[in-house]
Length: 319
Image 1: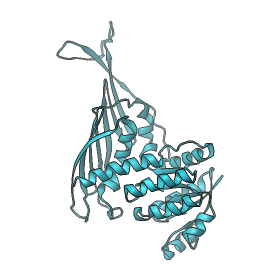
Image 2: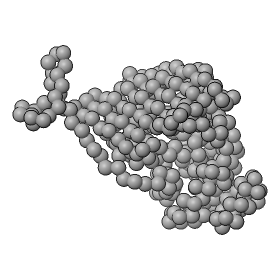
Image 3: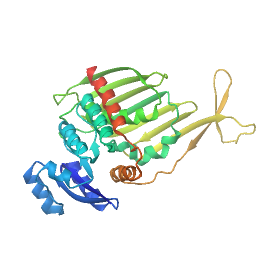
Image 4: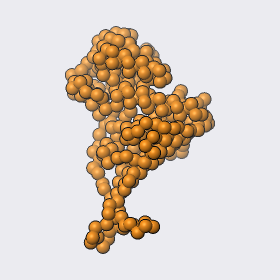
């Protein structure tokens, strides 16, 4: 079991603490939170061991789980890495792209592993179809949320859209060619609604919309590729897979057949991949333990986290 400590005991930090306590792959040593009142409350309520300083906690563990506000990610990660500790760091990886690049360099120098908390990679709906998403040429993503003051210290791009940026970058095997975007501030000091269009060198186009002032919640992405349409509902954990194939010589009488203007006929059929219920946060934490133990690249590497942040920052720069 890997000795682990958590930096930050806010809403998400408490979830991480609970799951790490349950995990058979980690030995939860304790946590640090700068708010002494909150730290005492969490310690009294759940029995976790509070530490007086960040340094003391880092010194006591092998893995540091950074669940602090984004502005402090770099300083926490830098101290942990320079002391030879592996780091799990919540998204976005850091506040700036230059900080993310520094973290990557430091991790390589000190031979430690790092994973970024892009939890949607572990969403059971996405994992059920990710291998079916092959060379998509048009992607549409909507991530809408009801207003919640938590997270409004950063633009909606870093708060919400970055989830979809990471997903899209993980399935499109091409470099970004061009980005255009617009954003509007409604309640916060930073944009609350944003739309972005990402064009890739291979011709793929992704259209992303994110809002944190919607009347309903939605987290849905649609992938269009040659002879297939795949829809992923990250919120309700559902998928739709519609495929086309050449019409057989003797099609079933109930077969759905389309014919284009050139007379080419295609048969439409549906696939229903199994969706296995899981706890995505526990999965991302435990696969990180597996990567450390097997000395392999984590599923969401520091490089991937940095790339997602770079694209997010390019979108913000368009505003």
